[in-house]
Length: 230
Image 1: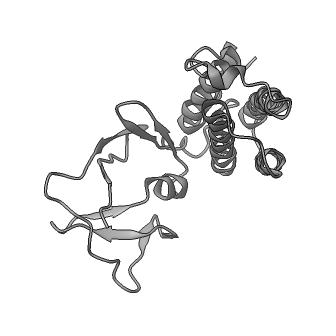
Image 2: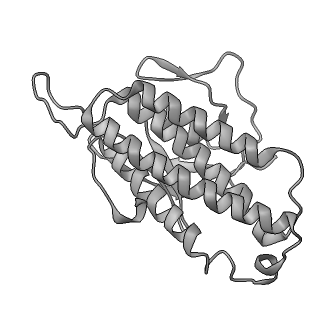
């Protein structure tokens, strides 16, 4: 089995980490994980599979790693970028716009669920496949649950303001999903016949722009606003 990994360069004081695609020529990942081998980050065991390459390097699931340190992963055309939270303010310093660590973790998880929802609906547009089963409702319920968890953990003014932006994004995403699903159920194949349907979809563009902004803002640890989320 050929395993395509990502070589990670992490510096503790940085808020963003660039990931450079691997492996190198001739490198393979045929070695199985060693029994009982696990990854521990800041004293916490990360439930991620560890694979050792033929040159002795170790590779892990970057999504699991990012989740463990309260970060997020953004996939772009020519790179994958992992963002990690900046260091918390020193004891005694109070910032009304700061985000709590628990809220960061919960909201990043909710954003990840939203990205999966967007991907599933986008697949309907590009392939024209019929909408079978209850997966649109299941995605909605999963995201709704994630946002509820984020709301429960909100403890600062910055948390609550960020929560409002997440709810706005959730509303936009739900409306867009409902529109696409309704078109497919009505046998409207206009989007599927347009090769540039996703690129020309203004609603989808706004959703992606807001989602990317929120991802960067949340891992920065401080609330900020952006017109794309309104």
